Length: 99
Image (tube, rainbow, N blue to C red; front, side, top):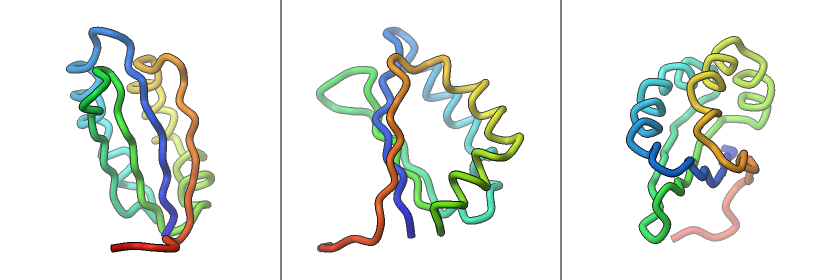
C-alpha cells in the first residue's frame, strides 16, 4: 500500500466552496483501479489548510492510472484553482512502526 500525502492551502474565503467541490469530485478518483481510500481533514490551527491522504495499491495506480486519465483532467478543473501555493504531493511506503 502506498500513502499519498499533500498539504492543501486553500485561498482565503473559499473553504466551504472547496469542501463541496472535493466531495463532488470524489467519484472521479474512486473510479480509478488501485484506489483504496481518501481522507481530507481541515487543520485545527490554520484555517484554509487541509491534509490530503490517499491510499493506493501501487504508486503507478496514482501516477499513471489516475494522473494519466481523463478523470484527472476533470479533477484538476474542479479543484486546482483553490490552491495557493500549489501543493507538493509525496508518496510513502509501508509503515516501519505502527500502533
